[in-house]
Each structure stands twice: as C-alpha cells, then as structure tokens.
Length: 355
Image 1 (cartoon, rainbow, N blue to C red):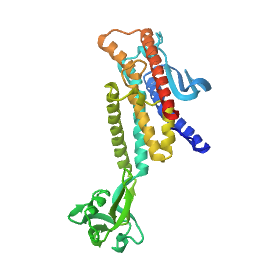
Image 2 (image 1 turned 180 degrees about the vertical axis):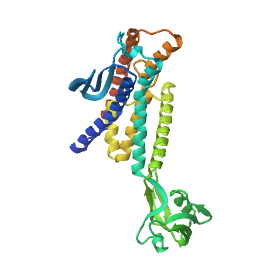
Image 3 (image 1 turned 90 degrees about the horizontal axis):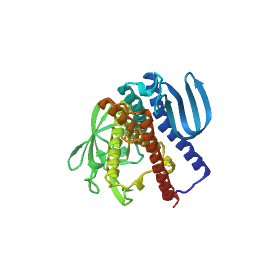
Image 4 (image 1 turned 135 degrees about the vertical axis):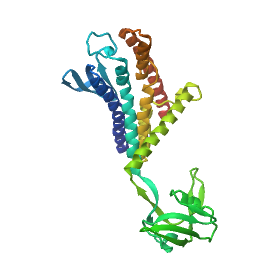
C-alpha cells in the first residue's frame, strides 16, 4: 500500500499532482475556448478548476475564473445546454463548427501528449554508435580506443555491423573466455582496426537473476537531435494510443475488470511513485494521462464531447434538430452516471492504496 516517506515527498507529490491536473485540464478547456471564439460563439465563462471561485476577472463578454479545486474546468458557451435566441449561440452554428469546437479540447490534449513525449525523449537523448567515455584500465583503453571513436563493426565468430549501440552486446555474446574481438572504428574520418580482449562483467537481468557478459569498457555518446526527438515523440504517442484502444477493447469485451480503472486518488499515488524515478517517468505518465483524457472524451457517450458530436451528426444527417433542452437533460443524466462511476473508481483507489 501507499506509505508516506517524509514531508518533503508529500509536498513534492502534491505539487506534481497539481501540475499534472493543470496540464490535463487547462489545454483541454483552452482548446474549446479558442475554437469557440474563432467560430464566433459567445463564451460566458472560461474557468479552471471546480467549486468556489477564488479569482475572477471580466474581460469583454467572458468571465475568466479560477476555482478552488484543480480537478476540472469548463468553457461555458451560450446555448450549449439550453435554448438560446442569441445569434452567437453554440446551437446556431453550422455542424462542422460545432464538431470543431467539441473536438478541439481532445486535439489540444493530443498535442500536449506529443509535445511532452518529444521533450522527454529529446532531453533523455538517443544512443549512437560513438564512444562517449573509455573506462580507465578497460580492454578498450588497452586497445587504444578513445572517446569520439565511432564503432563500425565487431568481428568475433562472424562480422557484426554496428548500427545501434545495443548490437555491441550481441556481437560480444558469442565470445568464450580468453578470446579477442576485432573492432573496426572511425576516427577523424579515417578507418582503423584494433584487437580487443573484452573482460567479463557481472550484472542482473530484468528478473533480478545474476548474469555475466563481456564488455569493452566504454560508454555511449548520447545525441540530442531535435528532429529525432520529434519523430520519436510522435511514434511514442502513437504507440500509447494503440495501447489505450487495446485496453478499452478489453474493458468493453469483459477481458479487463472495471476495478482496474484509476481515478484522481490513484493518479496521486502514480505521481508519487513515478516522481521518485525521475523526470522521464513523470513526463511519460503525464503524456499518458493527457492522451487518455483525449480518447475518453471522444467516446460516443452522453456528457462527453464524443456524445455531443453524435447529436450534431444526427441532426446534420436527418435534418431533425434536437432540442437543446432535451439534449441537455440527456447529458445531465450521463454526467450523473459518470460521477457515480468516479465515486466507484475512487473508492477502489482508496481500498487498493490503504486497504
């Protein structure tokens, strides 16, 4: 279960949790707000947070406010859930404008997830086939290898072309005690070769079992290419998207239990756990939750943006307008059911953590 370590950790967890909620909610509501303004919809209030107002400022026709609890937010548009005679009401806009406004929140969350993943992988960097450091007294030092040498190939039982740093371990894996390896490398544009006698090092595998492997005694030079970061960030986000749709499929088909869902309390625990492992894990969690919010919001369920889009499409296809009052009532019921689900999920979180 969850165990408090010290006051500093609790404060760190609280701050990082608030930051996480801000990154989740503010861009989402900002997406709705910007799209609504661009489409000429009157926005009555743009709020961050829920509960009592702690700050507010009227700017033009829109009241901007910050509320006490950073667990939600809203962009209150004229005629969104009720009939309105105002020409700038949401209900009077064209179907494509309504869909754009409703989808803008999730699109902003997706954009945030991509940006976060680009930053995470970009700051962490990418492995190269160039030596970063040579350990003193190592086999590589004895063979004359130095920092900034680019390893081209390693020959043991056969020649291994080195296009990725991880391939070095594969190349050395077939060695026996006392055997040497031929290393071809590039230095200042010139090709060189060296005979290296790797040393045996002890370590542990993913299961915690002791393993031994041969090493050269070198570390990898890390690249921080912005272009690679953008590509890898987008690829990582797409990978997470596929993973989430797979999880949703298992949930709806009964292969996964609703008890595995996580609410705000569980998110606090995850923030506490991931923050202890460093920026990379916290950043990955933040991107994952932003993407999760985007996907969940686009599900065709009442009270969610996806459910509202279904009503817009129905009206556009059939030509029959749905009363804002009727639609508002359906969304209200849907919201009530979502709140019950949130209570259920939160209860499970508390039992899981403190039980």
